Amino acid sequence: MVTFADVYAAPKRIVVFTGWASAEPETGAIFFEVPLEISGIVQAGLFLKGVAFADRPDEHVSFEIALRNIGGRRREPLARLDWRPIDGGHTNQRRKDVPQGLGGTRINGTHLHGFDLNWFEDQARMRKGNLPIARAAESLESFEMARDFAGKQFGIKNMDIVQRPPLEYDLFHGPNA
Amino acid sequence: MDQTLDTRSEHFAAAVDAAARELVSCSTRGTASYVRLPLLYPDGSSVTVRIDPVEGGLRVSDNGFAFREIETVGAERSFARTAATIAKNEGVLVDRRKVFVDAPQDKLFRAICDVAAASWRIADRVYERLEDTELSEIEAQVKDRLSGVFGIGNVQTDAKVIGSSATEWDVTAVVNAGGHKAIFQAVNTHGTSIYKASTAFRDIAELENAPRLVAVVRNKEELGRKLLLISREGRVIEAGGAEEIFRKAAA
Image 1 (cartoon, chains in turn green, orange):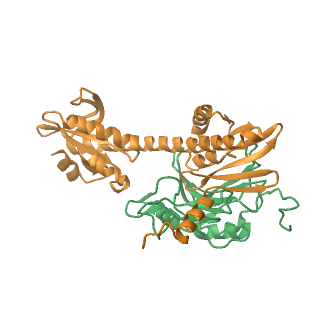
Image 2 (tube, helix red, strand yellow):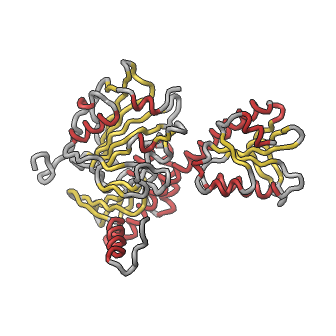
């Protein structure tokens, strides 16, 4: 039986990057979602998603790899990188089964909801609650660094084809500010 | 913990102070401010509200964060209905993606509290419902397993059992296990499921010639301390367990 762990561990590739969708009118959120292939076969339900806010340049960008169950609506996130989140960080559950001494810890800033932290190998299942365990990610100074780090973590070889989102810079928050 | 901190020590005060300062924070970008509150969505991120100036006051919204939280697990279709119910109770408004309210400056504090509470409740309720879906999946698996182990003719699914208090309980299945009956009840990790099963088990256990009571869960470890509750009156097995375990549990 192929498990989530097998899918996550396999080298993956983005077939085509179709660009970021225009901003959602209610929230200003912008997205992209692309299918992923493994060994030349586009995998049913396996995709990479990116989320950012047009009016929050150079912060609050997420990259997530997930599986959509065939014929259903449910999605199972496998891993996610939250780069410079607006809410300031992440708080781990205080459970005894949280690995690496992370139980109950607060992580400020960029963090990785790593697959290994949210996967029960002995039970062949993900933790409940949308990847509830995360660890601090290394210093990622730019969108490109965050994107490439996520690609490395998720096993996506050509992550660099994901383009910078169409962000709205102002005088104080621009790439050259 | 290695040692107990003295409440009069600087370390104690510093630890409490540092945690308290972390509970709420505020940042401003352009014309909008974001306030992070000490409530956590299921993924461990903090409930955060956005505040924008609008004519006559301030708009407080969750900026779609509850929607994003449930969209990640594919439950975004639940947003509209769930948000409408909760927004009404909290006295806030809702659009396609976010909960919000416009308030004058002197009522900002309460507006922030209400929007944050509504946003958290929406995510919490949708995740709770996902667990109900999971319970249905466990129930289906239990019925399938019981029919395979004991034979379809010996398994009455979706049965009703009257307890010692004369309360009628819905149970997943009653099995005729070689001269005596065994009740199998699918249980997930959600409190409602566990409390219902443990109350039913207690009531049924007080009957004369009480049947065997068996709770079937997806994974025993997942229950944590709640395992104690459910195991007081009944046996607990896993839905994916071996046939022999189902037989022994019913014996």
